[in-house]
Image (cartoon, rainbow, N blue to C red; front, side):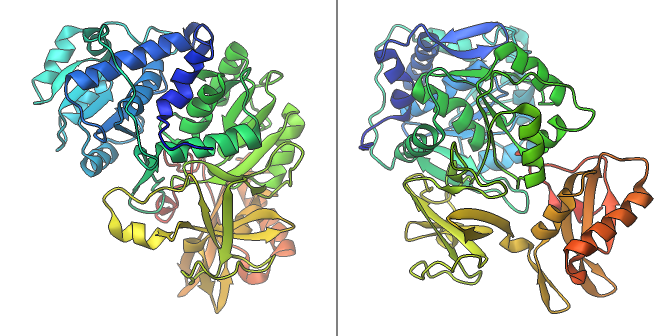
Length: 532
């Protein structure tokens, strides 16, 4: 596929207009539907505004929005103009926004009035703040914003401040063309999940994103024009940016959005309303959806669900597919690869594994202390660190040479995931940083966690190394369905583990939690568990 001068916005959106899909619904938001033509016109209007205020190509535009339609046309206008999109999580503490903005130095911030007021109290700067109203799902996301609110924000910043809708209306009658880009022109910066350390911004090109869409979304998983997507993960997260925005737009499908925090009850309502054919999910939500007391959900419209981000226990896969009777495809990706590069798929599924490598990608499994990518991969069943290369691997971390040189080597990316190959399928074995030695023996917390999850009463599990009587020993943290008989359950759990694990791998302590601390991508915050 020749992607030499393809602008991502043209590829995903403008080409749908050329194909005659202008009247087809592209975005659903409650009872509101936006056609491809609607989104295309708004994209052009916003791109015209960027030109009018002299936003240069490769300037960064920080999108700090919930999952509403303005996120969609802001993202496409950004890459259409040749600027670089940076997406922040609107549901986290403002310190993270500050760090991301100070790293990427955006010229424009697109956000809500409430978040804009918070941003004005931080030590940040930008040229323009564009405001999108705070709305509930189904409310008009282009309604007027009170002029007094805009004035109050303007008083606190030297940046130009106005509503996104007003900005788009200023220049809607001028000609505009997409910015012609070279093959490796950056399109987005994706921040790493930062569950264990400082976040880094992976640089992804137009061509790289298109490569993954072609190889994974179209050829491997099979997105199609009739699909309606719905996502548990939010749009700022690369997993959802792909699966619930770029992928459906690239095939002429339909995206469904909602702003509420995803819960089983919310999903029950939105799935009934939108009747999606693809649901983008995560293991934490899969467990909640299949709990004994979960709200029933009619998923008869769904042809398959996706899951990623955290390991999926085989017991949970069986429970989910028995409950909802449609395929569930687990895979692995990262901010550094943009999206999934190994996955289970239709007619080729190995429960418990991460599936097979997506065509166009290569992987190697090398010893933990090896940085020589010319080495042959370890033999089957031998665990090592996973390396991956392919057309969507990031060009590095934005303005971070040291970490770039450590992770990206001769076209390969060192993932820090421990994996092994068995019969052509990739198996996740934990994170390299999580391994610890206890009394001379290596212990992988992931192995213990998977064993805990096989016990019927355990919904979520995490295992850490803690100092017990001067030695590092495994300590387990669990969320259980049975909250009333913890002492009895601990005895039963220890007996269960003793039958399946070597004695030194059995946790000395088991702590029950009401819920696991999670980061903005749904991953367990292990650094918070250390203090528990």
